[in-house]
Image 1 (cartoon, rainbow, N blue to C red):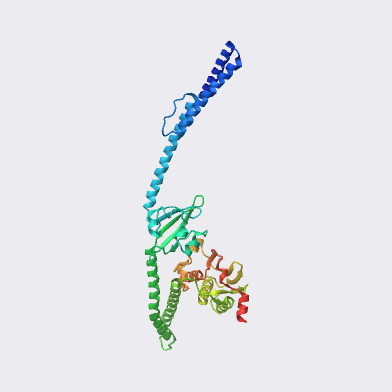
Image 2 (cartoon, rainbow, N blue to C red):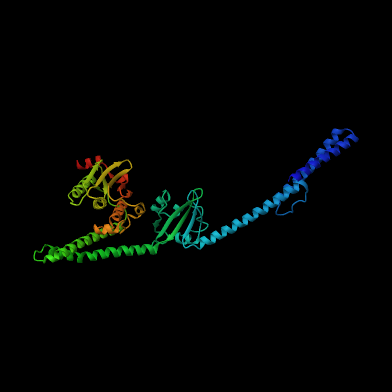
Length: 437
């Protein structure tokens, strides 16, 4: 490149020297120098015109045969064009491979813009959601999937869990939708057919509910006979121990069946819970008195009522959730420990927490606590009669009331379980007073 510029400057100097020589021979000098400069400028403008015409009509005409610096510029343009063509072909090939690979996926894939508009979708997404190309490209996805839960999911910030809906195309199908943000605000919407999984889950729930109902009657009969035998003074004293064990196991099975029936009822309930007024402080006072009457409770069982407000909901579901949290805290706290219940409200809703000084929970177990039959310490839970269903009941009862459960725990130091209820579920004190008046 430096050699080309040296040659161009040498050519300009040569033309000017020629003009100077002719000017010295044939006066005046300045006129011949001006003529030499104009000749050089005209020649450069002609080369510029030829290059510009070639750039505009590059696909129709061959590049001009110009030497010097202009030839070097043309050569660089040709190299850049060939490099651009290579990268363009490479990107086109990658795009085609991406389309073929996504088309072969068993799940639907939809690319959404920052405004949640459809940019592209594969064949599986078109089949599952009834999308049409190119009619639906450019439309907002929530205008095509008209589901209130999907609209709330789309505008939320938590996409860690998929949303299960029934598509507008086939109401007998279940689809799991999950957003995956990427790039500068764009998103992938993954669509999966989970109909078989949901049907198996429904069959499992029906089986558990039916089995619990069927087991309840014979277990009641067995429990009755065992209770009669335990109270019969004519029974051989050698049988007192076995009868006592049978009575305890029968009571445990009754408790498990009751929990299974309650969980099945909550899972099969449609929509949100009712909106009957619930006097939560009075309910907590009753639970507090019952826990104080227990013989194997911790040394301290405290209740802090920081608000007289109540809740709108279903009373037995709320009581089931609160009592399960209290029973768990009492069960896993040693006799010298303490359990503190707290009820309070603010502008963001109502809260109930149970804090204990018990054994605590390792952090890897906390995300799975609300799964049915999940136990952190299975041996201890069975020894104390736990079914592993209590926190699952709590989760479903809170979901029915628009709430959620927060768990904070330090292993060896204790745990705090906090129920959050939305503000629209709070029964304000002034409304309670007006109702009682």
